[in-house]
Length: 170
Image (cartoon, rainbow, N blue to C red; front, side, top):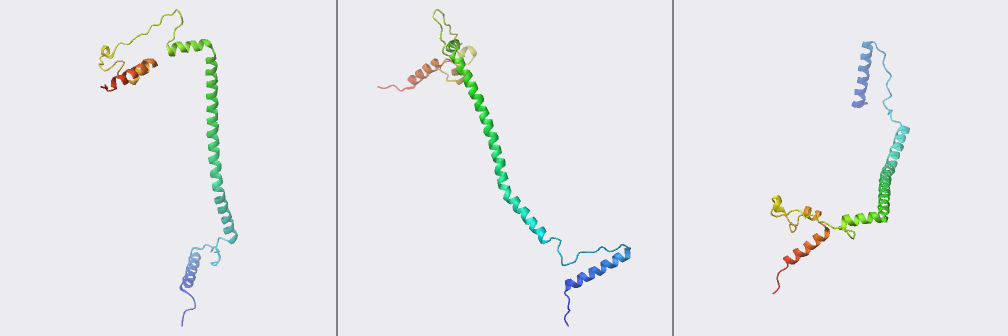
């Protein structure tokens, strides 16, 4: 004759009997257990968890966009402040160039202009041989040397170099 109960049901019953014997032997009262058929997660709790997850998913992208836009706004404000500072510097420079004395001073310093009646002196540095460098000189092509010379000297040296490098036509 087949058994009416499954193996799982018999094991559950044996476990409950063993638990009751242990509690009787220790003298402690037995805790009431939850009915086996009921789950701790109710339908309402599952629905609440589902709604919370949906809200988190729905709000994640807009929050990321919000944070990114706030960062862009901060960057734009910083760039605008730098532009304002640059405009202020340029206004100050424009005001300086409106002064005729400043223009004269710049012409003298940058273009080596002299006023009528003044004598201009140009100090020529010794060639590289005096310093121990045979390759130094006006035709060396060194950028440090070219940066220290007036622009017109560099221009004339460029013309000389181009003329010297041109092949002779027969």
